[in-house]
Image 1 (cartoon, rainbow, N blue to C red):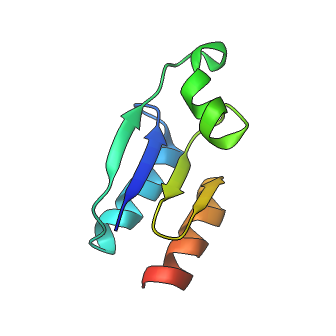
Image 2: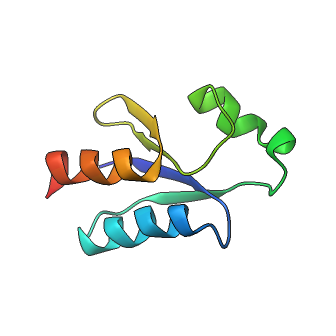
Length: 79
């Protein structure tokens, strides 16, 4: 499985997703983003927006934002 999680240090929504991925024993790469929205160009390029968390699931061709939606997706696909 090839996951990339874009997250901001100290972001509770990012931590929620990371913790859930750990609970599901999913390996993922973390890309730490800048605190300034205007400097999150890589997140914008990948997802079309600058908010985090953003999960990229290369195996399924899925890119998504919003922690609740990500957790629901992970449960439906990997739990």
